[in-house]
Length: 337
Image 1 (tube, rainbow, N blue to C red):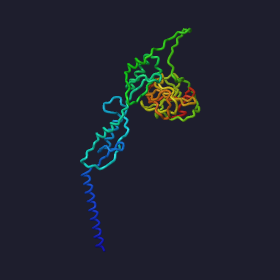
Image 2: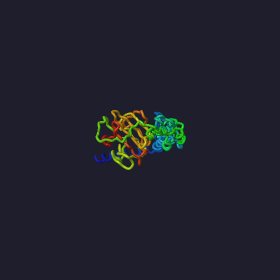
Image 3: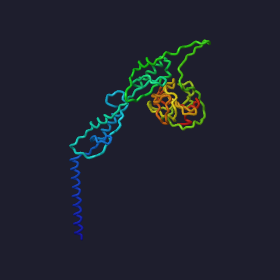
Image 4: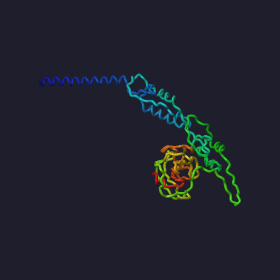
């Protein structure tokens, strides 16, 4: 009996050894003849192979985010169908074709250019290549005391076709309007007509928490640097809003849905957006860097309307947020933050 068990055990061990040798031989043969790689598909069609999926995708992502090397003013490239990948074993004599795949991706790419429209009274008048150029236009008109300065605003544009661009000097020359004349009246005092904006910047503030009928969300996340009602050397009256510090370019979201009633440059507020939410409620977003919306536009809660900046009377990049009910400013922290 013992001998039978020993014979059976030896046969089992021999079978296992032979099986393992066979497996190793098969694996070795596969490794010798084949290599792991990726089949690449675009819109369901196989377009080739790549041995380094991460490297190819990184190259495609860079192209989408920056366009061709050396291209000017391209904000991004829209690609309708990105590649998909499937791991496979490929004979070693078949060569990967990463460059051909990349060229197929580029064939369907649509480049979107970034430039800036300078608006007068919400109408696009001309275009410049950068936000810095647009700021030079606004500051140049301000220095010249152009009578239309309150109507000037900037909007960032993304389009497949670049508009005809002008320099800041050309833009100032085309947009400049002579200052309003000084008129003498009977009292021997003088008055000066100025452009009127469609926004209430009165310093009227009040305590309390009137019902506003909507729930507000935070336009940005950041550090509160100046609270409602505070006084300081940089302002002549009590603070009508709440200052939240954040990096320049941080997107600003609409605190609630509503209609934009002002979008442009407004004195000490710098570039500002005002949204009316109905029932006398308005929210103000001041010191912006870029404005994404224009007056008359309906925006949804959470929609990006501008970016954080430091324009106007500002000591650093931050959002100046106001909550006004029937023109009176109330503490935003009663509703948000």
